[in-house]
Length: 67
Image (tube, rainbow, N blue to C red; front, side):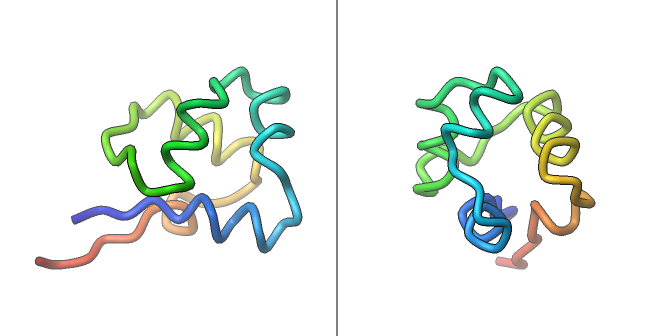
């Protein structure tokens, strides 16, 4: 399973989902779903925007958890 660690990154960087939305154009509902763990199927375009905005590597955003 792959887990998106957006909640932790936002917390660590003291950034709100609203700020991410305004800067990237990613909808607030998608960001909210990702943060709450309700959305796990995210396109590479969203991953790319998040990595650019948060200035992080993909391994900081995504975590592989063997099942």
